[in-house]
Length: 366
Image (cartoon, rainbow, N blue to C red; front, side, top):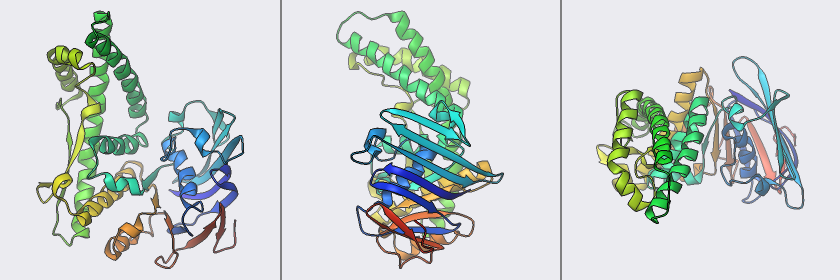
C-alpha cells in the first residue's frame, strides 16, 4: 500500500497543500513548529479515524477558520482509492471513493498506517493503558468487528460503573439491570480478550526476529498478553468472566467500579527473561518499541498481503545509526513518510521542505 497524494485546507497551520508521495522514503524536513507533524496527523486521521494528538476535530481547524477539509489518494493491490474528511462548523462529512460514510468504523481498514511518534517511546515504561491502546489501534485497522465490540464494551462498562457507584453510595440501583450489564460485559470481554491474545501471539514472532537482528542475536524480546480472566476458547473465557464477576461483586460495590475486565489487561514485555518495564536500558527500550512498531507492520502485511504506510514523526533522532539503517533497509517494499529537522541523513526518493505550513518538494510541487 502506498499513499499517493494528500490535499488539505485549513488543517492546523496548513492553508492549502497538495502533496505527492513516492514509494520508499519520503522526508518532511524543516525547523520545529512549521507543520511537519500536522501533515502526518492529517494522513493518520484516515487510518485511525481520529487524531493522535487531540480528541476534538475543532482543535484541528486553522485559527480563524470555520472548518477544514482533507483528502488522500492511495493505492493498494487492487486499485487507487480516495478518502475525504470535511469538518465545518461542528458538522462532518466523510467520503470513500465519492460515497458517503456514515460511521467512522466503516472508513477504517481501507487505508492502513503504522505511526511511530515520541509518545510511543513510553510503550515500555508507561502504564498498561498505553499498551492496551497500541493493541486497540493496531487490531481495529484489521478487524472491524473488534472496533464495534470495543465501542460497545466501553458503553457497557460506563453503565455498569454507574450502578456500582450508586451501590457504593448506598443509593438505590436495580440489581437486575446490573446483572444484565454484567452478562453483556462478560460476553464482549471474552471476544475482545481472545482477539487481543491472538494478535499478541502473532506479533510476538515478528518482534522477536526484529529484536534479534537489532541486537546481533544478543537480546530476546518476548510479548505476552496478560488477562485477569484467561481461557483457551471464547466460550471458556465468557464463563470465567461470569464466575469472576459473581465472586468480585461485593468488592466492586465497595470500590464503585468494575475491577474485572479487558480494561485492566496488559501486554507484558521481557528482554532476555527480565521485565522490560523495570530493567530495560534506554537503548533496549528504544529497540523494543521499534520492534513492536515494525512487527505491527509485518502482521498487517501478513493479514492483507501488503505493507501499511509507515509514519515516523520526529523519532529517528532517538535512534542510533544502526537502528535507522535497519528501519530503511526494507524501503524497497515499504513506504515511509518521515519528519525530521534535517534532510541530510536520508537517501530519500522525495524530500519536502516545510516552512510555516507550506510544503515544497524536491520536484517543486507544493
